[in-house]
Length: 306
Image (cartoon, rainbow, N blue to C red):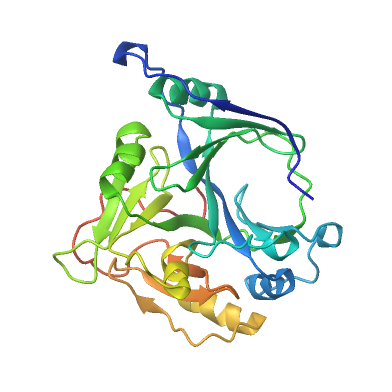
């Protein structure tokens, strides 16, 4: 079963003069992240530990190809079951399939991308939200989505409403090109940067222009990095108010990982989990507990509500 689509249109136009540029629509935050998995049953068991009330995955009996994790508000994580597709379907380099950002005007974004000369696919789903799909300079699939009043009928697992996506991390090979795409073109703004050493950046956090969620550039990753390392780097982060309470609930739900909460270089409490395919799911407190290394925060912190 594929995600139903009425029409794909590939568009690319030449750039116009600066005076002709339409105003960019608001980019409000992360709407969804899509991740490849190799075993739907194992993924359901792992991601089920995030929710103390899970009894059954609603709708999963109707589809073995994907599973929606419904988070706070309209946010979600979509798990693509690559075992249901012909081999070699499961990517070897990165299991992060796409990152979707919520916008307030898809028509304006269409005009904005067209005038900027950025190629995109315009998607009109039968039972979901219209979106524009682009590839960033490092090849990651980025979606811009305008929510519609009626939600999709998705196979899903419902997670406590206090848990929400606050960032997604991607391995960046060409920082200058990524900076130009996200900051200069789309208007993302610096939030924090730092590294394992005070004088070297390994992480660059770029906040959406009109919200508090961010995308994290994971720098200095070897070109021959193994599967586990890429799973650590290409990750998602779920915000919580109390990391120790979150850990206690996870263990009560059946999570048996050896990781313990710790304060990261950014001054925030965090706890790392790994799904059965080694993709990292990071729990992180919304606000720092101590002064961060390397740089001060340059933007507002997220919270339980966007």
